[in-house]
Length: 437
Ligand SMILES: *Cc1c(COP(=O)(O)O)cnc(C)c1O
Image (tube, rainbow, N blue to C red; front, side, top):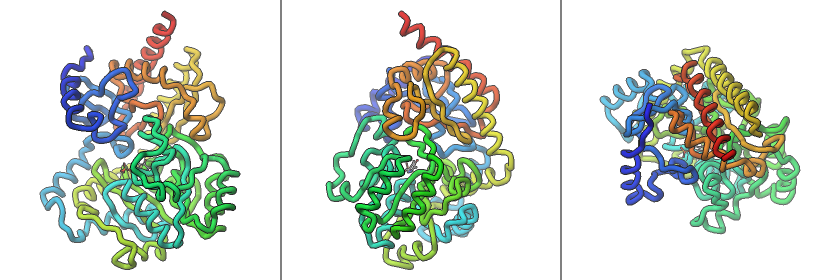
């Protein structure tokens, strides 16, 4: 296979003239890699294809939604048949009610739910609701967690803000920024101190139970329990942002695996099956504050869109009806991370691999553990971009940032995993030759 990128380069030059940075979302620019992004033509199963005809085994998976892989037949059929019945109604559909009920059954902590159009809408609405319920203004979040691009979340956030080293986005009013407290993930003392000083003004803690927007991190033992207890103690709410983790590790939330009952949960990504959707839900007395039942205003022309709902429902049905699906993707992921670990060890490259279910992330670091944002910042970007370039040219698509996780989907085959490991071996060998010259 002869990799080429003439068509992509020409198209990207056009994109640069008309889109900021040539993209519609910052993580799609390969700004810190040694090459311009390839431009996509289509995708199917575990594979994605660019306009030069190159084929890639895809581990970006659109940054989380595609647990079944690209263009899964059930999802595509559901979308086609929904589209024929109309693309949007401006009134409630039966499918919407069924879909919401299906989600609620998988999330016992949620009594009621509201559909929105993106993860960002879910989190921004969730904190409005938490503020209304508690009649308090402050939000506590963690450095390196990402909760979408709404104003209150853009200080020391993960995802594209970490890749671009944007510590705090311009355009956020100081008064808004001052309402967000930042703590270091896994730092018990810091959370306790913040509550001692500001506890009676904190509306909510918002947290990704396993942060997955600065690589994949794990909470220390009892850390999430402590967040649950301290919020109860101070009358604050706990919002678990499960936009990535919802339906990713089991049929339901990571909250059921870690045994934490949040007051509000936010969802997105997988529940839309690759179409734009988000949701937030929680205890009845809290959710009843939302208009038109209550007066916390939140609305959307396309909320509960019938095509997105159809794609989401089809995805959830596949996840539910394939009892071994979660174990199977976890096994594939283990084979991949074991192989990758062996390759890096054989070449003497210091690293830490974090892996859970079908998600993994590689930190190129000398550190002995990665527990928070500051640990993550010390991982090596130079090695990463060299590895990335070889992987792309060998047909492996990973995110163009050392801070984004990789996703394995149900469409990845054993052959995909084997070929991926062969390419990683080549990428590491090539990098070593380069630095030895
Ligand atoms: C992706 C993500 C969001 C934002 O979702 P969008 O649909 O991109 O707006 C929020 N929270 C978490 C944890 C995410 O991973």
